[in-house]
Image 1 (cartoon, one colour):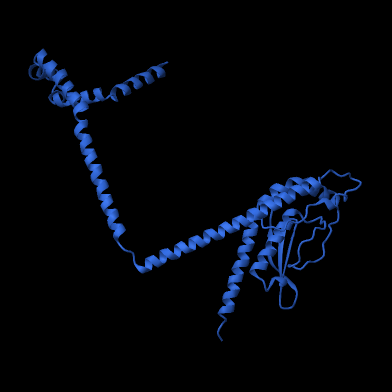
Image 2 (tube, rainbow, N blue to C red):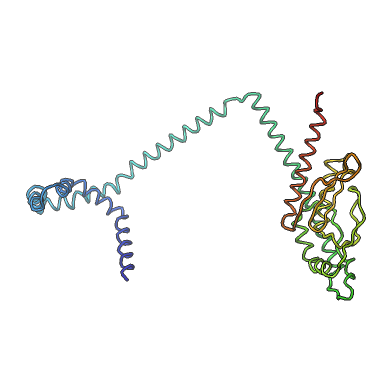
Length: 320
């Protein structure tokens, strides 16, 4: 109750103080009666202040009306009605002058010629930006086209081969229904969204019911992935392996036969043939559905860094 009353009083006081008439009247009254205010804050005793005010400041009713009401009210009305007229003119003049100065400065800047070096730099940056935009546009167009094709293939595969729950007596009957490997550079997030929902039950059933893992024969890196069933390979493993193989074929066209890539059960291995003909572990990484994209980017960055380093060593052989 008391808090509501206090809030109401504060709101009323704020409304009164924010009123243009009341605020200008208070300022005008303080200006006309500054002597009264000086007496109030002086060091005189209270009886002396009252006597001085009655004898010198407000000796009669006429002075109270003139200095206390009439003159402050007239001044406040002038501040409300007369002051905005010259203030508007001055504000317009100041803004017009500032705009004119900006136009003059802009015209001078436009007329100032640039040097040949600056013109060449601007032309080169413009050409690079245009080429970069066209390259990104073409890449996105191809990626979108492949993505639409893969989505349509997955949808068709899902419609033609619906996954059903198998009995415990025949745990291997549904192994042939695993989706084929996807030959595309779409992101792992898209594959997860389209394939994981259809293969979760199948993968869990195979892991529980199949005690011995089926090993696939060794493949060369340039061999295409076949559609034969594999207990240990998931669609995500196939995508990781295909992406790395395609990147190696682009980055190491002469060394692709010396690299062996395997991806199984969330583990990526990249082996390289050494001088003796044996395979040595080159890169090893673990991935999940959430970290597949980051692992791909990290492996590609490592391969690119080694390729640049090898090129520098080849171009600048050590001096004897």
